[in-house]
Length: 348
Image 1 (cartoon, rainbow, N blue to C red):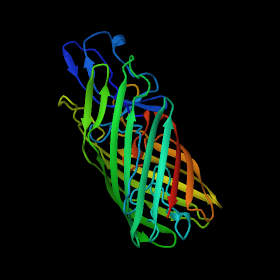
Image 2 (cartoon, one colour):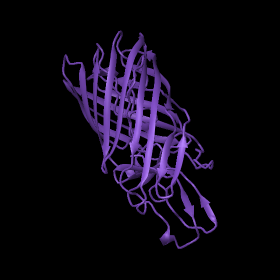
Image 3 (cartoon, rainbow, N blue to C red):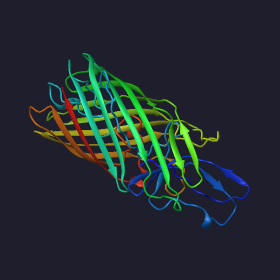
Image 4 (cartoon, helix red, strand yellow):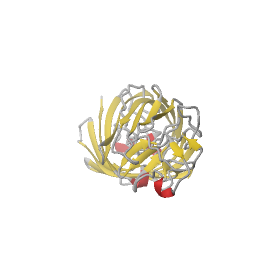
């Protein structure tokens, strides 16, 4: 998942510390904490292994594959990536990385939990609660937790990453007719304590505690057969220059603007779904060859099951996004590493 990855390059008499989350193969490996530069042959420099990539978090943290444990109780759905079926059908349902338009049904509350796993024993966990707060609005509270070490990514140096984020979002349906609807979903994610990435070979730790502002504007068009087409402009405010433990700064993702496209097709109790988000501005991943911030598209594909009269839904999917929350869902894993996700949600 997210591990602090440092890459040692050479340049005698010069030393600088950088932080980044490195994802190897199909896992988010570490946060790059420090990088020493000492003049020497390039062959002696520490390099990220093939298939690895770093991802920066908003507050000095990289948001690459993050372990998200979301446990929250909220007053409504705001950024719930997946909505629960309401009385009119599955129109409230989103996709793994994009939110839907419709709010939680009147007088109801939904809870959900999700796990995403990549090779190397790297996981992300998420959970949330959302509730209706009006005819066309709801609120959601989530909790995101990251605590991983994973396999060694650079010359045998272990990286440990820790982060716990609480998210709060509000969803308001601004327009709706028979076929088209639009919602406004502002929100923010708050670190509980500092997010930390530690390079155990040095050691050095990068810490961050900045708030991450979010907003998305999902627009949906429902076809005659019930298929939902979705377009979602998105903004996530990551840190431009996160600080390290020693007071120096590194390059962060900055302001990220993305445009998502999603589809959901219901077939009786089953549904197929998928989404893709292209980055229009900013960075959301790390180049596995240069260890620098870069932009990568984010995607998911999978299926869902919910019994006719069942309050429980189960989703199974593959994706390269770090997690389901507003910030983590726009972060792409290194080198397009693919994770498997399982989500269970219920309404009462």
